[in-house]
Image (cartoon, rainbow over all chains, first blue to last red; front, side, top):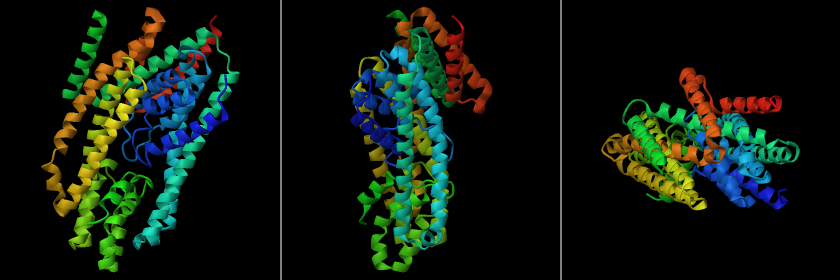
Length: 226
Length: 244
């Protein structure tokens, strides 16, 4: 299987929008892996791969509180690459482990690249400090536009890298079904650890914890009775 | 006052020039420009001072930044002394950050995402994702508009306006919905992924999940879920290659 050049361009464009959405503009939540992955899967003609990969990476994203100056992964562009791999490998059960690795690795690289971006913006602000301090709205607008353009470039490069790696791995990495499915199980186990660990941390000891436990207990009970 | 819609639109990019020194400051300056246009015509000198103040250091939750933007612009038109406007902006940083994080990052977003995940496990696909985007953006758009309007109406009295509004109560409640949502979604997601692997495979994945949770509790802030997962995936790849 392969991806058409037009679809590759579409994926990079989508990954760029997704990367911009995380912080710069418009924070409409298309950067959530479950959204980025599902739409990428739809674009690739394999919605199931997009949903499976996006949802698993979402479990890791739910562990993140994107607060202020804290460092956090940028999962969006990596999710697009991860879905590309899953769409190229027959059966999500054989693809999810490697896809998750692509998504997580590029998520971490994406987090680092945001720090780079923020330092470059600070450099730009320094260069324009006198004009900004004088209330020059043209200088303020130009800093804004340059920063967003830089973030778009960052997101496009990340997505292109993730999709490129996905295409390469789908072509060159040959895994026995047993290995591929073991990796899928490991990825699911780690995703569940991330979401449960994050939920317990956020819940503290108050009402939120009680509702978390009630929700989980009720669902498990209903599933057992089914 | 004119320029409200343009300012609201620009607030969607308030983090566009986020950096470690000004944080949201440059984005706030960019969003303030349409609201300050009348002041520019009335008094160019006062406008320049107001524009410079609006682009100075500021930090808060991005969706609630409209409260600070509106109140400081109102104060500029009311000819409140510059030092007092600067103090107002600084005083708003922490409360708006804390309320917004509690309401959105720890409340509405995980609650809606959990509902989306649960819907997907129930068979929904693109529809669940679209519903999530519509619901979130309706809430976010309304909160953004309310924040700007409330800030513009209350000026230096914005602190009292926030205290008397729905915001503190909603921020406290949102976490409960998030907790309940994640509690419901997590087991459904586990079943959805693990069903094809049988009892042995599912058991192994759940043991790994438990190990990860215990590891995260023991290691505290040093634990990073993606690093744990990548290490586990590499270890599994090596083990499956070595063990026949």
